[in-house]
Structures are given as C-alpha cells and as structure tokens.
Length: 245
Image (cartoon, rainbow, N blue to C red; front, side, top):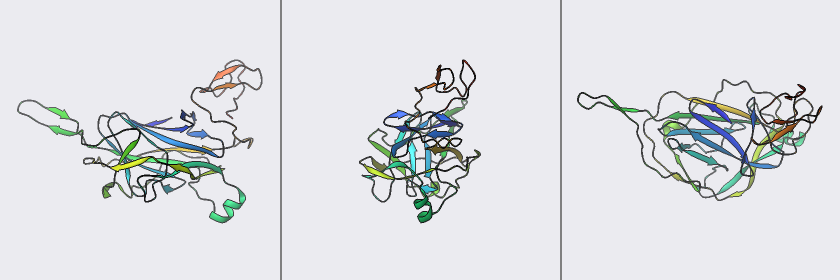
C-alpha cells in the first residue's frame, strides 16, 4: 500500500492485496495483477496511471468518487468494453535486445488531482460545499473522464526508485472490465504523484519470487525459524534480516 495526500494505491494479485516494502512490491513472474485506487477525500479525484512509462488509460483519466475505491485490471487501447489484463513478466535478454531497456521499466506511477471545493456564502453564514457531481461507480463498471484538461499531466515522482528492473508489464488474458464516460468538476491545480516498483527477484540475491507477499503473509526467519509479521524487516527474535520471497 502506498499512501500520499489522501490517495491510496495498492497492487492486488489473485484478489489479495500485496505488501509494499519501501515502495517495492514483489510479484512472481507470469502473474496478472490489478491496481486498487482509494480516494480518502469527499470530492472526486482525476487519476492518470502509467506502467513502464506507458499510459494505460489511453489518454483518459480515471474518476474515483469521494470516499470511494476503483480497481483497474487492464489496458485501455481503443475499447471500453474489454482489453488485456496487466501481466508481469521477466525482462529477458531477448526482450531487452528487441524493445530496449527503459528508465521506467518496472515502475507504476499514479498522478492525480482532486476536484476543487466550492465555497458557498449564504447571508451571515459561511459554509463549505463539497461538489458531488454525477456518475455511477461500481466494481463492474469504472467511470473515467476524457476531459482534455486532465491529459498530458507531467509524470514525475519524489520517490527515488531502484535501477534494478528485472520485469515489465505486458498484456495478459482478456478482461471484460468495462469503462463508461463520467463527469468531474473543476480540478485543483496541484498534481500529486505516487510511485511504486514491481520486482520479480530479490535485488541482492537475484532469487526469483515464488509467491506474492500479501499483507497477511508471515515471514519465517532463516536463522531461528521465528514467524514474523509481514511488515517486519528484521526478525523480532534474533535480528536477522528477513527475506521477502
């Protein structure tokens, strides 16, 4: 889970939320995954997503309702009714030779802006009105906006990512997740950015990840065998650094 400025982004695999450690999510090669975006404000958020430097929403922005969540599991490349799921694969030498190595490989970037809060001033009373807008948000049908003001947002991050990029995201199996056009009000000028990195190997040992590290997973110490919480970096019993794969 990555959290910043009232927005949460998590990676899910097989329906389970994965553990994030130092902005890194460990995922086995060949896994299909999705991104869950949760808006903690009362107003809508306009969200853009790029993976490996590619705009997965094809120039559009996802609308996430106030105090709501929206999950994205596929690329939008022309069709709003179906497309290929996100699939994380190993970047082999052959792949590198054919497509090249890119600075954004393995990196998921989420940039977003919130709706402006409209202040209403009735006689003698000052109140704040939070615009609710229109649109339906369900797990089956996710709304997005094609407002040109939300396109072309510079994607940058204040998080320094590791250059060890062993995997990339490609198109997986076909998903029938549907998107419909929605409405969002005037957006704030401030653009926020969240970043995380997907890895399929331990950068120190280059050992492949065998199963996703979920938020409920326990880590067994390789020295004393103690079962530790998934958030621990060191064994609570003996202090050994915990292997996350």
